Image (cartoon, rainbow, N blue to C red; front, side, top):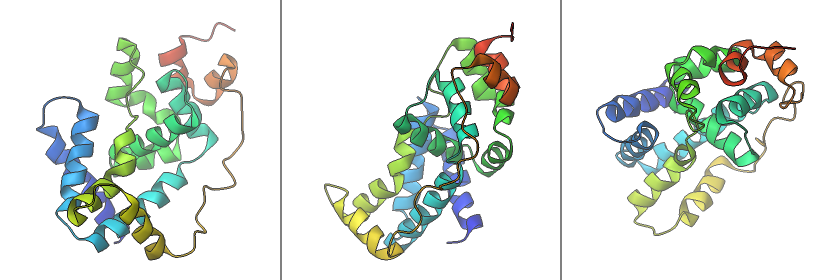
Length: 195
């Protein structure tokens, strides 16, 4: 699977989810599982490999800080969900956020979340497991062991751990620092800098 194929699956699932009722994040995750389950085991394994690459590429302090502001805090697990949620936004938003995380301050869902005091927008835990759910559906398994065993065999020895260089670390609880590094998001979630 090449990069374009990966993003086509994401965009198609986004289109499918747009007509669904209920929680948009869950609708996307369900549509993604449906799309993947309609393919093959090989395609699902290739999708997961691409997903892991894109997920790992945004494992950086500046994006973690963006998730911290949007989510009103962001644990290790929540940051995994935030990165999955960025992927779920599609190629354009993913690329824009990967280049300059503060661009998320103009994302319509982020603006709405700030206005409503919501702390869940762009966080999508289920997307992390969409490939395993689809694989389980194809395989008729009750658990995810087969998927993870097959995926380990598919990708070979694991050398693609999270990147060692996450960029410069900084204090997410320092409002001045957050205003300096992510001014748009800080204005939305912290208010104007009165320092």
